[in-house]
Image (cartoon, rainbow, N blue to C red; front, side, top):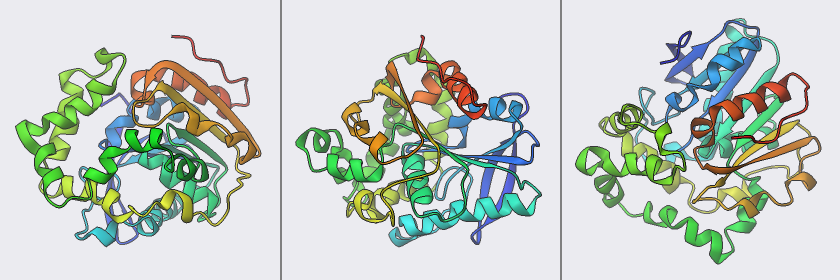
Length: 299
């Protein structure tokens, strides 16, 4: 764990969440991870957010790591997951963190972020999303064979039992391969990092909960669950172009859907953008949050 980061327990929406926290500012930066990650995936970003005056929180989301793990597929519907995000914000407010809120999401966390801001579940001042497109564009993309081929695993995850068994086999070897195999700079995923994700996946019930996110939301929520299509919340999108799961073409047209929109592509960076290129990602985040020109990617 990076210096200055500690883990706390936060009660929200009737559940308990393990949250990595850094900083003690009045502003809140809430970081939402993806699959098959955890709060650990934000280890590089929490300190820089703290240095900018935020209290930075990165929770293990419902079903993941050391957070609560409700049983049943229905417990992982997006409507329930959004209540968790709202509950975490309310819990931060109750602790006196009452300033600006920046919501930051990657992968599934990015999907939650989009739905949260489009539905205005709670007031959000700024939104940062990484490698997850606007729901309307994702829904449109899922109607193409190109993206459907990339998203084959979503259909595989609808099977009972088998996905869990395959992902758990050989000490969750396939979880480790999901990171190092997709990464361009594989040195960013040494064994010590992969072991964190493997251990989390092997917690009893964790893989079923993680996969239930896909089972509960199989009927294309990326097209139907946002009450609005256009967004006024200032938004920064960071996109690793070597994403083998989500094509760059899914970003095209976002500027027409978001009024205050900034996009930066990171060539030769994979889906795991904030872990694989943390220096560049942090520089972009810091510039954007402080009103400075957001730099282009420079390896």
